[in-house]
Image (cartoon, rainbow, N blue to C red; front, side):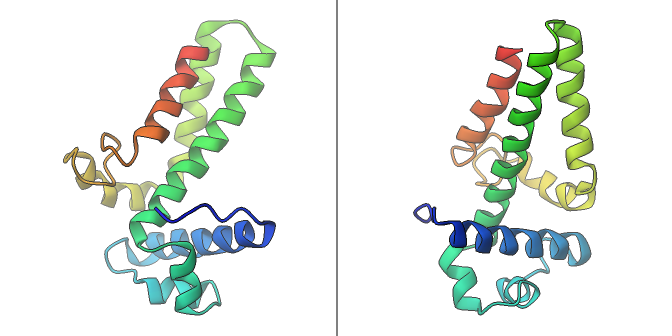
Amino acid sequence: MLPARTTIRAQKTRAAILEAALVLFKEKGFVATTMRDIAEKASMAVGATYYHFRTKDEIVFAFYESTQDGSEERARQTNEKTNDFSARIKDIIEFKLTQLGEYRDFLGQLASHALVPKNALSPFSEETADVRTRAISIFEES
């Protein structure tokens, strides 16, 4: 992974690239989408796109992190509202399904990676260990 780009401008640029990529992944598919396509959709130079993400895989990792950030925030809010374990778990699962629902086709394309734990995009790979650990901790804290 590239070093973190932490300025507000860099964060906005990364978000624009991620948003453009997700639109294209849904429209054209993950495999058919190129970094050049993503740069065009984000209205920036290809080099700028590569400055923030070296590969499409890194964009997917950013997607994983972004959705996990949303899940953690939702879990915090739910945990503040109720002590009912069942209600907390139900809310976590329903939120995640809703959150990922619009990306169903794109995630379906990534499903083949899930079957190969050594594939970087697999939810069981070393590369996704941090997001996986964070996801598990939501359930542990509920």
